[in-house]
Image 1 (cartoon, one colour):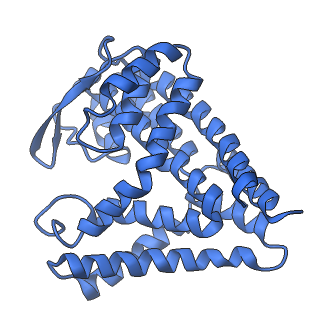
Image 2 (cartoon, rainbow, N blue to C red):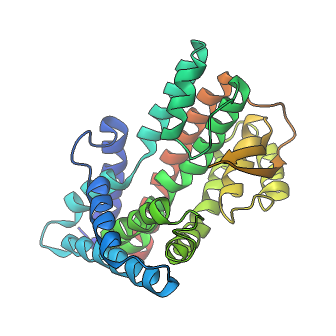
Length: 303
C-alpha cells in the first residue's frame, strides 16, 4: 500500500476511534505533554520573548520528533490512527456542549456556570441562560477548528509529526499564550505560532461549515461580511460561519479574568437559545466528518 494511502487510512481510522471512544479517560498523551511543558517552564521561565521562543521551539520539535515513529516498517497506519485519536477532541467537544445544554434545559444555572470552564476561559459569574448559551455556541464553533479540523489538516500534509506538532502548539497556547503579566513576553511565541498554525484551518472550517449548512447562502454571506471583525485572526471565521448557518447572532460583551471585552456582533439572527447548543454540536460533528474526508483526500494527493 502506498505511503499516501496508509496515511489517509490512518487518519480515517483515527476519526472513527474518536467518534466511538472520545478522549482517553486516563493517561491522555496531551495531559502528559502538559506536565512536561509545565516542568520545563519552571526550569527555563524568564520574562523574555527569546526565552519563551526557545521553550516553544524545543517542545514543538520534540513532539514532532516523536511522530517519526510512523516510518517504522508496517507502523504508518496504526501509528497514524492512534495519533489522530489522541489529538482529536471533536467527540469530547460535543459531549461538553451537550452537557451544557442538559444543565440549562434542567434550569441548573449554577451547574452550567461551573461547567463553562470546560469550554472556554470566559468568566461565568452572573451569566444568564442566554449568555451561557451564546458562550457555548461560540466555543463549539471556535473549537471545531482547534479540536478537529486543524489537527486533521496538519496530519494530512505532514503525517504524524504534523499531528503531534499541531497539538503541542495548541496546548502551549492554552498554557502560556494568554496575555497576562507573566506571559506577555514569555508566551508571545506560543500565541503567534498558534495563530499561524490555525490560519488555514480556521478558514477551511468556515468554508466546510458553509458546505454543511442547511442555509449555505446565509452562512457564506455572514462569513464573508463578519469573519474578519473578530479580534482573533482565526476564531471569527468559525464563529461567523456558524452564526449564519444557525441563524443566530454571536459576539458582544464578554469578561475574561475580570477584563471586559466588547466584540463586534456576527450574524443578523436572534440571540442564541439553549436549543441552539445542540444544533451547534450537530453541525460541528458534520463538519468534522467532512474534514476527515477532505484530510484523507489531501493525504492521498500529497503523501
